[in-house]
Length: 419
Image (tube, rainbow, N blue to C red; front, side, top):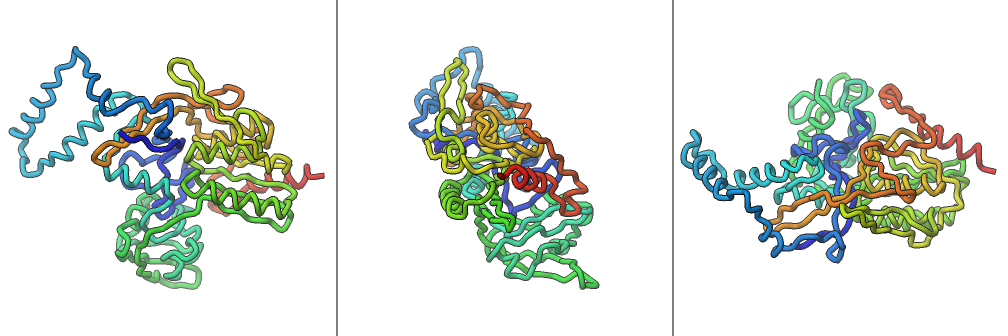
């Protein structure tokens, strides 16, 4: 049984990418396990040589409890197959996977789940930052579905969609009263297929139809901007496959520019690879512990800084909110405990448990909670999250009116404290 490399994340949902203000989370996948991005599905994948690689094909088949009659399963299967009124609709594979979903859900742990091959494929694609759609951020603002930004070079931009456009219908289906998630499900689809969006914008007296061919969309997880006031803003949307390399490039640019201060924006970041989180934190933490894992027997496994510390002398504010989870909490928690940055915004989600995801022979996978992770000071953030040094709320009215008081406060603090 093969085990993937280490990550701590939520299932990263970048369907087209939809930005839903409600709860402050990215959202939009069309399977049930992902209906609430930052409240359901955070994971940790153990490496092949990890101490948490606790099972194998051999041990997995030798743990039957003596007090359970497994023949009952076969009896129920047989009775269903013989007596169900709509026999022609029975799907043996669906029945089998359904039974595995039920088995795993009996653990009463929202982070321990079974994923069938389709769900596993989507999960892996999300971690890679790829999906099939049109390539645009959307959100619900003032009761309308609005395009926040078409991604550069993607089908939405090529078709002529613009930031601020309102999507009034998808393939003739009105979006009135729909959530951003629901609209995402309508827009998302197989690459090479067409989707028709009916758009209203300033200057139009009636909706204009745009036919867009869906494609494979790749979203970069790191974005760096240099402001005219001398500050740098580094936005990390997830800790995915491309994050370490993009972050390395960003650090080199920051070193060359020598900004007055740095804003690390981890808002709505659901997590990602553990190694990437440790590497990124290490650019503010030149030595010592970044994060620890605590297992059921009380043992600890520590992850120390790699010693870079290239950004530790740049005044830094880290922006977080209720959508900042798992790996993003590792980074913010380390910088908070070690006093390497000011944490600003709203309390983080509070995902402090650790899972091991194991690949199964048919392409499905099993995610099991195996440990908790702790900040450098030994604190668990499970269910309570990380409370910022400076609390700054972002209201729905702020969002609807394109205000960002959290970013404004970060800029104000860095410019005020810079000598």
